[in-house]
View (cartoon, rainbow, N blue to C red):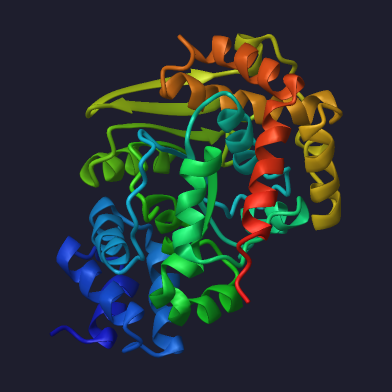
Length: 343
């Protein structure tokens, strides 16, 4: 068996790992065989080198194999998620887009966590909205069938990940785990909309998703660095359906939206983000924040054939938001999760 030191040395020299070597490394991390120093060194070296498709796939297979699993009746499922690490401090787009899509009839299995490198992760924003995060994995999954939206708190489903939490938080940079979060949803959604923080990752993530058996996916990256479809300028999009891949570039004007500078999308702190999320769900958020969320929701509606194209998806998403349907989904999720809080 190859040692942690050998794997770290290999990666630090800029050499890629095979799928099997990456799986060995992740097995060592998740079983607690590696020390915090070894974990921190390894994930930093991978980040500096740049993670390859095989390294991500091998790691994802191990994480998926160790996750809590329970079957969901409502299919197909979609997850909408950003890989994080863009450092832009915007509203939590993917979470709010998920609530809008659930209001429009999609079944959302939102896999996420608290913020590791940013100010407000999906768990932070949902807690601020009144959702009880501390429920059992089984109850969380049943929430998809009950409410059309469920939040799957990653540490509850990937308890073997506990060994990496300290090193991740202490080094404070994006790592392979930012990639793995969107790829290791424990209920295996058939469709995925993923935002990434580097253009090169749009095709890399698409290839990984195909390798992991995802039926349909859209991977996006804003030219401003945003791990969402952005309003500041161009967004690079890679769409995959049954392995057939198409790439294109989007701009806000394609959807009748105005470009805005990133300063108009940035938020000061977590409290501001939570307050804005409340305003958004009541249809009272400033237009640029509403447009940002709805444009990303539209891509998911299109991917799941709820809309013929993204432009039609924007119209459906806006109608859903202003009808109160997204807020109604949140209210159901709040009631459901608070009735199942772990004692």
